[in-house]
Image (cartoon, rainbow, N blue to C red; front, side, top):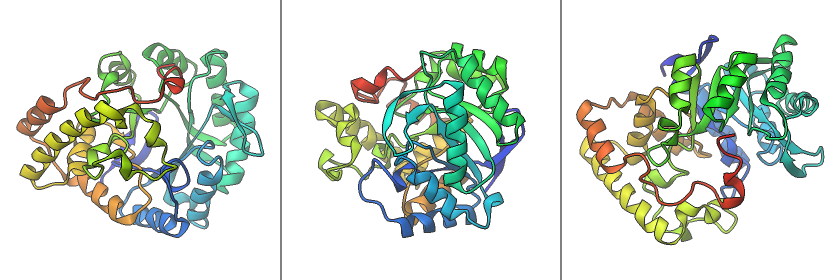
Length: 327
């Protein structure tokens, strides 16, 4: 797989990464053996950026990634996150960007990952109670100590990105970006990243699986799959969004690729490193093949016609979580 430089600080990653969250949490049943095999296969394919967070589980996803990389730490670029306070016994509390928590959380993540450094350390969400300069100052200290190589923020506004970048150069901003979610094209975030030379890492590039075309009913989800609470998968929103998926599927079929590959190729065409999440090798291999798909001007125009900005029906999170976005 093609390797590219993410941001302006020299971090080299595969042109597609792997979101590891669903291997441990939120998306129904998990299978550690298959998850470990999926990470193995990702590394074989040149997918080097492995994305996790202390809140995934909590902790168990970092531990899984650490287990997968035991004895070969340098084979991967490990990205993890802090900023959602979690007690040592796994109780999730509120946002916490205080420097003392950032430092403590990083040391705990290093233990769980079985490593002495994290390649890319993000603020998972922006704590409105703490000036972002203080939180990023703590990240910068960790870089100085050699415990972190590069830093980033997630789901931040253009103004916050500028403030953070002024304290210490950001290598990446991670945000949701897909054919279903294009707000960053219009709220100043994408323009800011391009101006400042900060990399874009796109999570949920398949619309939480919707754009794969495999989901035909909310009943397709396991009882403990959190997408049952996602507004885009409910009621009339689901029907309207499924209509969009059918149109994406039509374009993909004409191009002789899968809907997932078309959607991922579009994200890549926008200059982002997508981190589609999967816990199975067969989907990983399908996703990885998207890096070989070239979109023509005609393809882009056809996609734009069926999936323009704002096409998705419904908010991207339940109301209680929407306030943590664009911090």
